[in-house]
Length: 148
Image 1 (tube, rainbow, N blue to C red):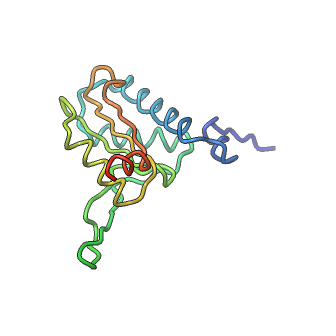
Image 2: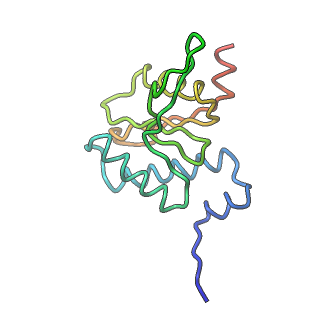
């Protein structure tokens, strides 16, 4: 008889009971674990590779460097940008490894979410000493209400 091991997050996803809040809490926890183990001095790509590994190990469906097309003037522009990480087709994670997040970083995530109609977004700056100060979440619903 085979023994099957499932993480709590995988069980919750399988039963479709994981709310956005619980989902984001779990993802943020994985980001914090990666930060705790690696520290805050690496390049963005290193954090991306390790975070993707950790997310997949936790049972999430993860895609990286996802090419995103946009429509402009009636035409489709192929691969207008690449999303750093998309998790479970509901969250875009935009990674940074910079001294300080700027307004443009928040606007970048906001644009990506609106162009893809992705419901959740997470901006993570791994160069923060305390990662709680370097993680920002938002929802597409909130963004649309701000820009009406």
